Length: 294
Image 1 (cartoon, rainbow, N blue to C red):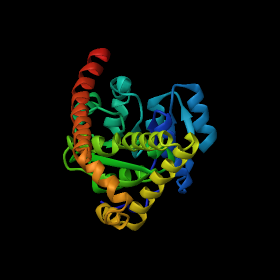
Image 2 (image 1 turned 180 degrees about the horizontal axis):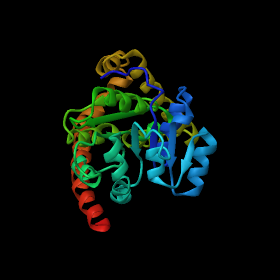
Image 3 (image 1 turned 30 degrees about the vertical axis):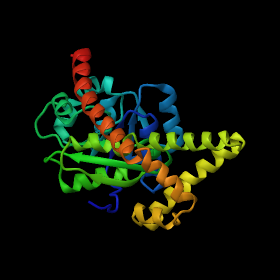
C-alpha cells in the first residue's frame, strides 16, 4: 500500500507519550494534522507537560478518557506506545471502550504479539495493527514494517499507514506477523549496524594518524552521504557500489578485503541472529507480561 492523503478528520489517541509517541505526534502536527484531534494519555508529569506544551494537544493521565475523547466521539485510531511490561494492564484497562467503539489499535510495543494483545483487549474482532518502527523515526527518517489482522479495513490500514508515515520515510506491509521479526533484524536493529561501522571506520582512521574528530567527522558524513545517494537516486546499491569502485583502485582493494573477510556472511548472520532473538523475545515477553500482571 502506498501513502495516501491523511484524513485529518479522524481522531487519534496515544496511550503513552514518550519519545516515539512524541516523534509521531510532532510529525503529524508539522504536517498539518489538527492538534485538536489528538489526545495523549501519559502518567509521567514531565513527559505529559512536554508533549502538551510542544504540540498543543490535549493530555490526561486517564487512558479511557483519551481513547473515548472524554466520552465524546471516540478515537478512530489508538496508538499503544507503552513499555511491553505494562501493556497487558493498559490494554485491559481500555477494553470496554475499545470493544464498544472498535477503533483500529496500533501497537508499537516491541515483542508483544497480536494474539496476546487481542486477548487482553477482550478478543472478538478488534482491528489490530502491529508495527515495527526504528529509532531514526525520532528525526523523521524512520523505516517501518506493519502487519494488520483481517478485521482491519482498507480505510483503517490507510489511516495507520499514514500516521506512521509522519515520521517514517519507508513503510511496508507484511502479510505474516512473524515477518516483523525479520523487519526487526533488517531495519529495527539496523541503525546500530551502521553506527558500529562508523565507529570502526573512525577508529581505523584514527589508528592511521587522523585526529579523532576528523576521523569521526569524515565517517559520519560518509555514512550520511551514502544513505542520501541510496534514497535520492533509487539506484540499486550494487550499481552505486560499482560506480565508485575503479578496477584495481583504492575502493576495489577495500571491497576485496571486506569480501575476503566474509563481510556478506557477517551481515547475513547478524540479521538472522536479530530475527531469531526477536522471535524468542516475543515468546518470553508474552509469558512475562501475563505472569506479572495476571
